[in-house]
Image (cartoon, rainbow, N blue to C red; front, top):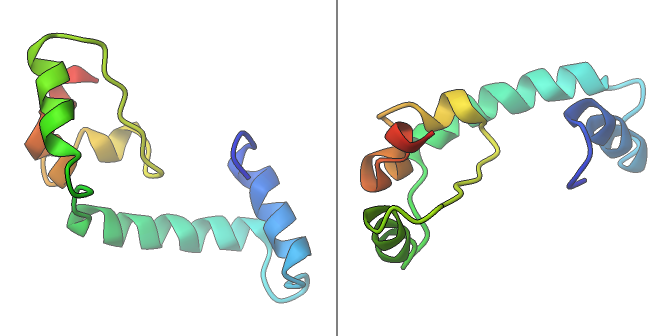
Amino acid sequence: MMGKKALDAAKILIEETGLQGQLTPEEFLREREASLDRLFPQAELLPGAAAPAASRLACRCSTAVTALCGIACLKSPTIPICRTLGAAEQL
């Protein structure tokens, strides 16, 4: 699914899991977004992720942070990665 637009990936998921007629790709995406909005504020950093990333930021090295939630989510100070790494200021 990586590299595909969200709607295209949702269409593939619905087809491959046999959910046609039970769930549309658009419904799946709405439910997925609601779940991510609920779960990301509680997500914790992976063990060992904070120190190397913070070190790179302190050296002003280019650092990329990826997440399924998108830029608006990453700019939120309530998200652990933003608090720990100051990612909201870097975006």
